[in-house]
Image (cartoon, rainbow, N blue to C red; front, side):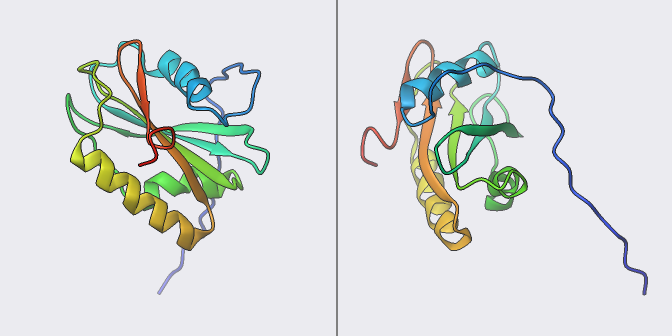
Length: 142
């Protein structure tokens, strides 16, 4: 049997300027809306954060269809592990413009929070980006 040697690397594709910590949903929304604006399908982003809540990376982990996107914990937490992040914030858009969370959004949030505990990477929030507005699970205590 032959074992292959594998290495994983992060590659910087583009940079976004921000001036505050990602500790407020409004800050996350502003950055994410620049990335997701005009997207015709759901996209899921992971904001990887250090211990001081500074963004160390933003990764698009899933590109879906008009009203759905698939995400497994391994895709959600891979960018955080590679960036040695202490926490993540999950962000996705609703192309309809209405950021109200679906039942699927709620169950995904709970599942990833639980799996983050196992990994030792806290999921601080899940922000849904709509048209000129957003929904934060943290702010709404869900």
